[in-house]
Image 1: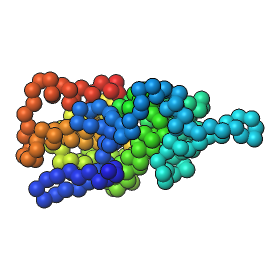
Image 2: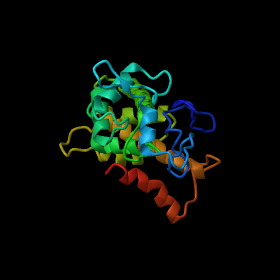
Image 3: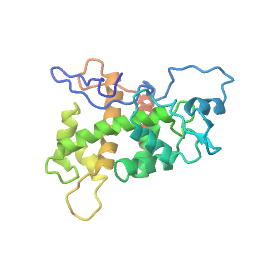
Image 4: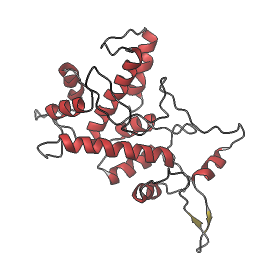
Length: 244
């Protein structure tokens, strides 16, 4: 399933939007389509990401075996630049550096949220090439939405533009919810609240993720669903604590 292939359903309006990664199942856990034997070691996993061989200078050449076929060389290069220990994995600080050089400055809170959603099933604190490539692709699609709805070309998204952008991808978010959401970005200056790309991604990913969780319970797309307390907390808490 590609990132734009998952459809938000409604009676007659079904636009698409960047999806959560395929590894994000209904319980908010990750799984792998590849099964490893029980004695498959961490070191062997790293070798599967980077095929190392001696170079002319006596060091190691950087392999690309862990990236999906067709991955842009720019994406691979961005990963290589921050993976300085050549482990084949990057942590949240390295991911922040990679994203900030590729897009703009990303707050560590947003980085942690993305780490949670795209986490490596073998190492939840770090991303491998496959997860990094998926994350980068998803952000590229959020960037396209951001630029499309930044109609005044200010480089930021205001409340009305945010509303239209979310509606354009199938998230008909009530005004009351939008007001609560955007208020967290109020710096107290009295100026109109506007979101940069980092904050836009944070809002979009949270709203889309929670909407998908809600629709798991609202099978008929009626706009109503029933939860018990445990189900509700299990649904919401990961989006609140994963990036604090």
